[in-house]
Image (tube, rainbow, N blue to C red):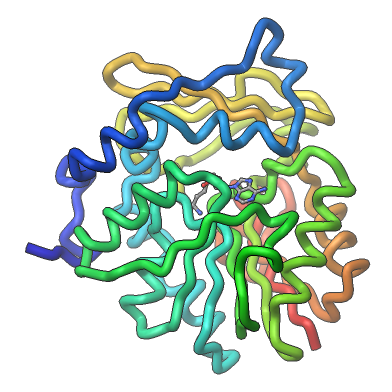
Length: 285
Ligand code: SAM
């Protein structure tokens, strides 16, 4: 029987055998020197195998649902948004949420394994048939058609782009796929604080899974390598680019977004060092 997100508990959150088969084979590969892996294409080798199956343990849908509240939904509804392109679908948390709230959602991602898991989650949690599209942000217009009122890129995803050229290209593709008065919502970890003062997180938002640790393994100005450890002692890694908040805001402005509001852990006012996450809401007009 279909469940709603509200019914979720991480222990219930199992994929179907078909999906498990699809995603379980491949393993993460970082080669001999993982600290040299600083490439925008590498994400397709990171969201594979057991990590995809474990992702929902890491982010715990039910807790995430509670901690995010209606922040994103309110932002979209306040602007009269109807159609939303979720460009970093992952395992489908926001796509399912958007469909539940009555938005027309299209779910894109560059990882086929993530999309397979998202599709199966859509069916499991609410009986939703996700409209999934396999697309890389840098060539989004090639694979996704139409114009959208809003684009969301959530869960600290944009951090996977390692060159400024790729970041500009992706933002330009997002800009082009929005209607003239469209809005882009991108979130990111507070890397300024990690780079300048070291890592601390309350684990309140996003990475809320019990007994799952997500912590930096290595940090410099060009790489934030995070290690994720699960109760069964399995370990996975993500190599990401540590985006600074004002740099990200500047890029969005330079691509053409006219107004950018940046929230800290969903609050309008905050001290820059405090939030774990920043959320940028960028308007085209
Ligand atoms: N939004 C989901 C969430 O919050 O749980 C997933 C977040 S996960 C950290 C990042 C996602 O971005 C992955 O599913 C990955 O495949 C996708 N991704 C990373 N780089 C991408 C790119 N260049 N094009 C398309 N998808 C990309």
